[in-house]
Amino acid sequence: MTLMTKKIVLATGNAGKVREIQAVLTAYDMKVQPQSLFNVPEAVEDGLTFVENALIKARHASKLTGLPAIADDSGIEVDFLNGQPGIYSSRYAGKNGDNAANNKKLLTALKDVKASLRTARFQCVIVYLRHELDPTPLICQGTWEGNITETAAGTLGFGYDPLFFVAEQNCTAAELPAELKNRISHRGQALKKFVTAFSGQNPTQNISDEYK
Image 1 (cartoon, rainbow, N blue to C red):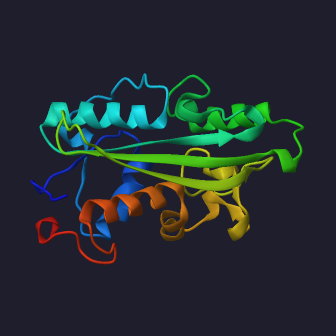
Image 2: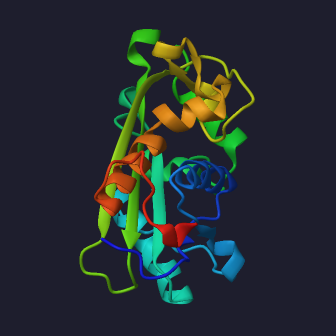
């Protein structure tokens, strides 16, 4: 798969996602620009899966800009809650992107639930479309296992990071340095798969001089 233009639009208005995706892809000499630079409004995410919503967002951004698009759809699945909030993670408490309200609702839903039953995972699906009508989108997925804490900890990251305990690091995702989080997280994993699939080469190598 080769790049036909120097510009790729990043189909999200979430500042945290923009920051993390740009940080990872910049390391591979890929330059992406958030859809806000093109005045693209948020897409209506009415799909029933992460894949469907990522495709909706990528197609929406590509249609309105005429550019290739990358979209991320991600969320947290809590086993005790039968996988909720899942695709509704960003609007779990009603208002889209209200992290404090979402975290509060999740802690309330898990009140008095013992630690062994608080298993959870972050899921991320990355979709790349060459154009709006691309019939063969590139789709990559990453998963990050953890547990939901009883209280928030950490000030880094965003979303449910202060509640997501990573046993291997003995801290929450919100206590991890950005570089480490971007390497081991669900989004980091999905992006690395994307880079490898997109370039057809070792991800430690540059994708193309066109990105420089």
